[in-house]
Amino acid sequence: MVLSDKQLQQFRQDGFIHIKQCAPVEQCDAILDVAKAHLKHKIEPIETEIGYHEGSKAFRTDEKDYTSQSKEAFVTVRRLRQVYSRDILFKAWMEDVTIRPVLQQILGDTVVLTTAHHNSIMTKMPHQGTATSWHQDRRYWRYSDDNLVSVWLALDAEHSQNGVLEFIPGSHKMQLSAEQFDDKEYLREDLEQNKPLIAQKVSIDLEKGDVVIFHALLLHRANENSTDEAKISFVYTVKGASTKAIVGSRSAEFPEIVLTKL
Image (cartoon, rainbow, N blue to C red; front, side):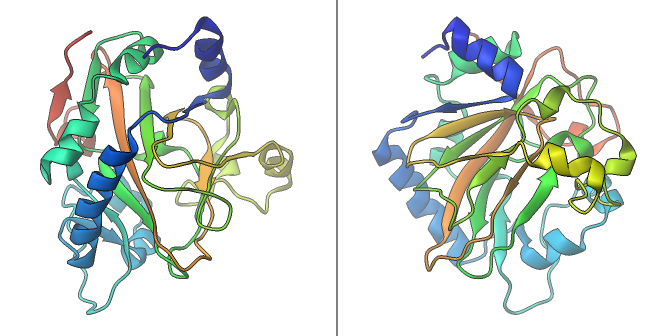
């Protein structure tokens, strides 16, 4: 699988690309079965809704312990973390050779999995999974440059009722000021300056097996889940081999896996 010149240009302009039916349905179903078991038993490390909303900027930037540290008996899981080492099915998808040529094209470099960030099964639990505000993933990551992208796999249908992904096209190339963000570095929706920017948003409905690849600086968000079924997705991040984690940061504290060039 490779991108056409037109598709590659579209990615560079918009900061994301939607690839339909990238993963076989059977592979998605197998991943989903394992993910549901880990979610049911709340197998650490996990992030809960409480942990997501309470985490400070400093915590999100520097914390290296990915366990939930939750004292609550009943918590809503927002994501399973560190999935590369959880199960061979998760590992196999993150090392998938079909999508690797596309990632090589986008990065213009050898592809390296970073297990420090994303490396997650993401959830929107029914009537409990809250909305995710506008943000750039790169804000808490510490690397020598911005040549990082995330790979989002829909394990089932994703739409406006259950937490669809939304993007602001081209925002990965915009010069945004600190004043446009709140103290946790979410884009302020109440700020007049930001309203024309947010008005440019696009939503992408996904079917099982669809993939969205998006730049680490692209502004994106997701709706809450108002359906009766959990929405479960798989996201991991890759970087170019020449992009280096800053020594001493959380980004440098977890293994990186170099994927053989195809």
